[in-house]
Length: 253
Image (cartoon, rainbow, N blue to C red; front, side, top):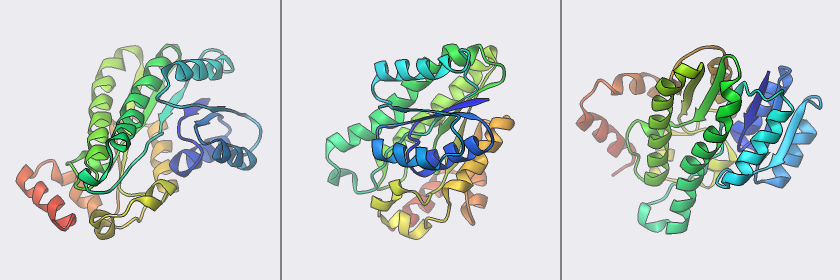
């Protein structure tokens, strides 16, 4: 079994790489962070892995890297984990456009690039999976993370559409939707929302769901803690005005 992971140098990607390698999977670890990848290489169990510097926004690099990984796997790909992502939690007008663009490029364009170029290998693999890292921020637009939240709405819609479309190819597409996770990405993210909600999930909590998603079929996998583990499932049945009010209060606005 094999899995190709983007954004693997730290956080959820790193934890996933270590978990799957420990389970005996052939793991593809990719990132633009050379130092982080080298550190991961020194920690990963065994030598059954493939490592490459790859920018998910560079389509040519994505096509080449996925192709080289799959050459080592008889042209097959069991799981694509679209994990690479960036975030910025500040008032919209205080974030310069180039940072908004980076969020959009990595979180949406990167997912499209990797999924598209993984398709030929997924199609020829029995019970193949595409697992996209989404977010609880895709339930309702979250203040102070407008662009990030919007990018995860894209991932959610993309997942739902391909889950239906690629069923005819035998490829299961799903996403993982965690609340705030204690990862390096969150170290620079401070807002009223983060302070009120708290950062209570670990990368291992998320990888537990990823591992389940590899073995079971479900479109959306929530990773939540109290009281959001109760609120999020019922929120879709509530009037949007109520959900908006809860989000607004959480953001202290």
